[in-house]
Length: 145
Image (tube, rainbow, N blue to C red; front, side):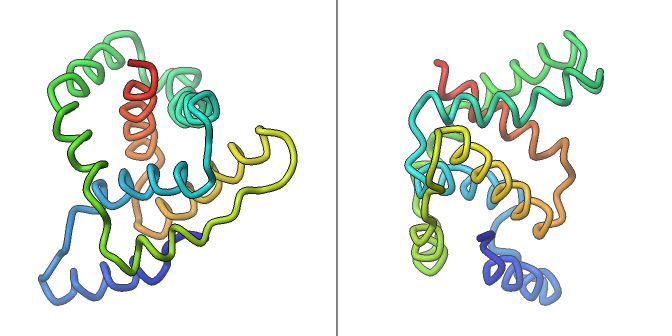
């Protein structure tokens, strides 16, 4: 379940010139809420986020220089990312994300469920796959550090 109600609110606010938060921030927070809501373990989170950006490296979209630049950006913004993730979403969104139910089966099923939910939410927010990959990289780095 992607937070469609939030996306509709974001679009209405944008049309009215009253944007709540940048879409990237909304997605980053949603990514954390999905992992929390599905009770992913640290290993499952690491797997989810590694897979979320690995495609960009594998396809050659990100070379060593691009990854190094992304790492510098992560280090520069790490404290802000941590603070953003620690702050609650609006109460209605928190309630909707809390309704997620973990898929039954092996841990891989929950990781795939999280990947699909995040991807659907990113699509509804109109964010490109590379933006999602960058945010996965940031969350991966938080998990492994």
